Length: 524
Image 1 (spheres, rainbow, N blue to C red):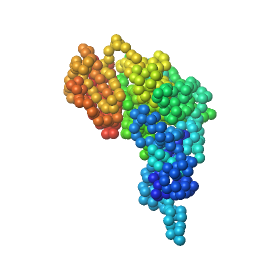
Image 2: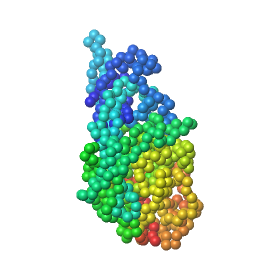
Image 3: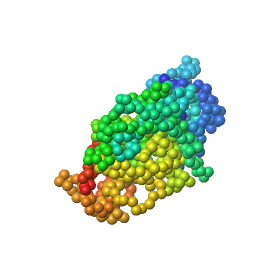
Image 4: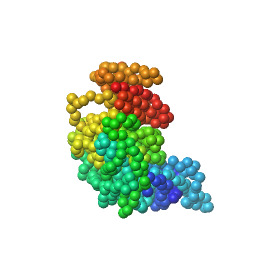
């Protein structure tokens, strides 16, 4: 659908909460608003125009909700959270006024003409109604010219965003978690004849954190109903094997049939192939501006990772902290889950909580910051149900083949005295870095080159762990490189690891070029 737009106005088109069919695109620009334009022409002062135009909708104080999470990008300051926004000038035909219609003639001469254009939004099924809105005045003082009627999804109860996770080290069970607008239990059907019924949970606005000194977006401007989170554990599987499944019900519909791969059993002699990254967030699949975009990050990385999964090269993915960057703007979780689904629905997707999921004032987190936007771990723990001992105790360990993984949280209180490890993976710094075997800033051991020139750490005589930062947002390094820092890379990417009982082979892969930018081994 197209809309005629006055060529003298600077207009923006944005999407309110509520969005069309799942993982679809919509090309939509709403009808020309002659009433609003008449008011505009009769009231040339913008402030006077806004006083007359009762369709105004701007809330300047909402900027504080973005800023407290660290998002300093230019976003529409509206009273309802705008999921995404685009300038109509994204259509070059609008800028060139190729489609011109005269709106007013004087003595046979056109004195007012309008131009038309169209733009495309990528949307996902967020279960609630949506509106498309035209406004002028820029992002800081938006003034609405017209808006669509509320649009709804054809099936707001549709089961979506299925993702897998391991529940133990056996390789014989796998948890499937998905989202639906329906609270009645659904099923996962797998292995041709097997079936499990889902356990249903959700969270509410009352579960979000806030304080009188620092009101949170999750408790106010950024809140969106998450629907219902379904989870079911598929049992009776074989390790290192391929199965298929679908989830849903006859009442709400079924997902596509999906093939997935189980990981090798812990303690087995099988070779393990896994991928890991952190600090990824999301990026829109259209030219829109959105809250907390991580440009090029997960979009390029998840494409590369999905290719690895589809090629059969991966049995597990570890996303270790700073997951979606929703940070109190809850609808962003739906977009993130939609983005990772092509990979996370096919292999175990294991996560660790980060400051962007947990930290908030007076919430019990170690760091008293507003980084989670008031989510304080609630949304994360509902969407990603890892094998932890209790709520808000996100430590766990799991074995896959010859590798023992220990997942901790630096956002929670933890103590010294635990067993030592060979390799530590960190995020938060948005780059890649690898160290020597380092302890208290001193290299206890250095790698040596093997016959192929690969750095190799010999841990038959353990001295200290090798540490790697895998926050893949490709920001420029600002601090000088210290002696214990051997490699630094500022590119979007992920790590790819192959492990046997004797060798852990580690590669950093550039997600855009698919080139291996760093390669080392640890032997035992």
